[in-house]
Length: 80
Image 1 (cartoon, rainbow, N blue to C red):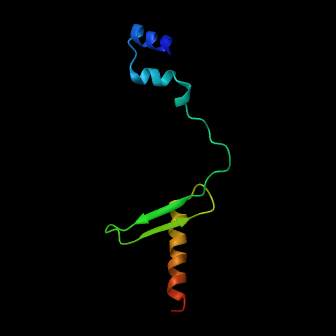
Image 2 (cartoon, rainbow, N blue to C red; image 1 turned 90 degrees about the vertical axis):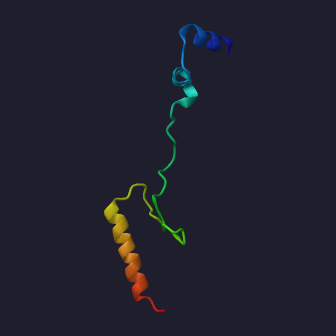
């Protein structure tokens, strides 16, 4: 710790310089399977929120739209 403080003083290092030197700030890849993609929506007036979870990590805009259309079709055709 004293060596680091001396290095900061003698080399006029900034906080960002010291952070780049630290091994703890480097991103470590996370092991395991990718997380499922979740599309979240909240109304502007915050009366409701909607969450749609997919079984894969990456989903295109078209896939989201297709899922929403399928849901709307199912709701429209269901018995009341």
